[in-house]
Image 1 (cartoon, rainbow, N blue to C red):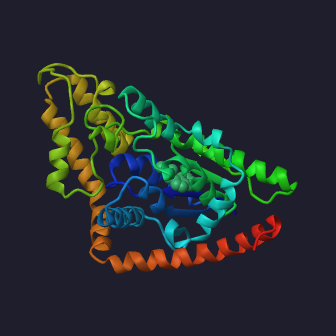
Image 2 (tube, rainbow, N blue to C red; image 1 turned 90 degrees about the vertical axis):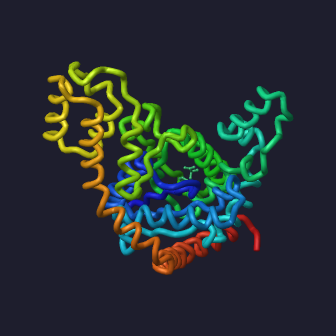
Length: 330
Ligand code: TRP
C-alpha cells in the first residue's frame, strides 16, 4: 500500500472548514493508503509561545481527528516532537538548501512585505523557525518516504521545495536516498465559507468551531451574514451563505426541499438559519460527544499518540541509519 503523510499544525480550535477541507478528505484517503498523520507541534512553536495553549491545541487537534473517525489501529497518528529524527534530518536537509530558496517562501515573504509596508525593518518579527519552516516540513515528509502528501493550496510551494531539496540530495549521491513525494492539492470545492461569506479562516474571525455545544452552535449560525430581502421575496439559494453551509451537511433531497422554499418566497432568513442549525446539530452531535469524551480523559489521547509515535520512530530510526551511512556521518 502506498503511504500518505500529512502534518496538522495545532494552532487553533478545529472548525467546520478544517473538517471539510482536511479531516474528511484525510480520513477518506486513509482508506486507500497507509496513512501517517501527525501533530506538527514544532511548526506551531514558531507562532505559539504559550505552553498551555500549545499543549491544549495539540490535544484538541488529535481529539478532533479521532472523534471524526480516525482509527489509530489503521492510521498512524503521532506527535512530530516525539520523533526527534525529524530534527536530525532537518539539519541534513539544511546543508543542501540554498538560502535563496528560503527567501522565496511565501509565508516568509508575506511577513517581509508587511514589514516593508509598515516601514519596519524587514526582519522584524521573523524568527529562524519561520525562515527555515520549509526545511522542517521537508524533513517530516522525506523521513517517512511518503508517496503522497495531501495539503491545502497554501502549502503547495512548501511541497515543491521539499521535492527540490530531495532531488538535490539524490543527484549529489547519484542514488535514490529520498523518495520524491507527490503533492495532492485540495480542491476549491473543499473550501468552506465562513460566517461572513469569505473563506472560513481563523484569521478572518469567521469560523464555526466543530464541537460547539448546541446552544453556542445556534448562536454562531444566527450570525451568518445574509442580504436584506424581506420574508415575502423569492430568494436565490446559490448566492446565500446559509445555503452554502447547508449543502455540506444535507442530502440532495434535503437541499432541493430548502432551495424550493427559498424560491417560493415566504420564508425569512431566521427560518433558513434554524433549518441549517438543526441539520448541523444532528450531524455533529455524535462527533461532539466523542470529542468531549476524549478531551475529558487526556491520558487516553496521550496513550494513542505515544503508541503511534513509538511506531513512527522505529521507522525513522532505520531511515536515519541508512542516510547517515550514505552521507558519511556518524
Ligand atoms: N505546514 C503545514 C500547514 O501549515 C503543516 C505541516 C507540517 C505539513 N509538516 C507537514 C503538511 C508535512 C504536510 C506535510 O498546514
